[in-house]
Amino acid sequence: MTVALGGTFDPVHDGHRALFERAFELGDVTVGLTSDELAPSTRHDERYVRSYDERHADLADELERVAETYDRSWTIRELAEPTGIATEPQFDVLVVSPETETGGKRINEIRRERGLEPLELAVVPHVRADDGDIISSTRIVNGEIDEHGALTPDRQGRGKPT
Image 1 (cartoon, helix red, strand yellow):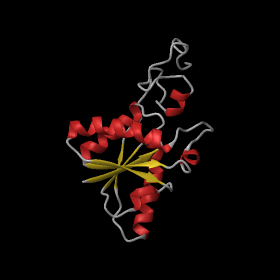
Image 2 (cartoon, helix red, strand yellow):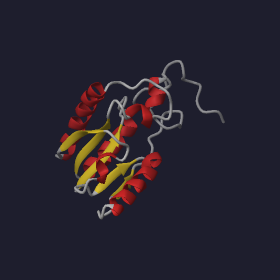
Image 3 (cartoon, one colour):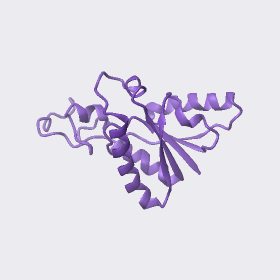
């Protein structure tokens, strides 16, 4: 199978790694990486996003590591629009997170409009940090958690309110 997924991946964290693992379980992988122009508009917050080249280098390192386990091929392509590469005919599966599932459904509408078969949507559950909240790049950049979801020293003992 040919598998697509996309994102900004700044920084790569265990939630992203869960997406990559699932993608490589399913087949050969193409990752769409948001362009410098698109990346800020895909964020739910106003924060700095590293350059495409920096994100590409980190992503390539991560994909190489995961791909070895599955003996799969992979490639990274630049995303210039939100629907990205998944509207192209060669893909069978789109790996998404719960918050991007709606976008996956929209991609399938576009594919149908173009006379293409819809993609199987492989929804990967969120990975949770030690405090029970979702691991996200924003939380990492804000210094709340590390890439594995461990609370940073100044946040330890300040878990979720009960």
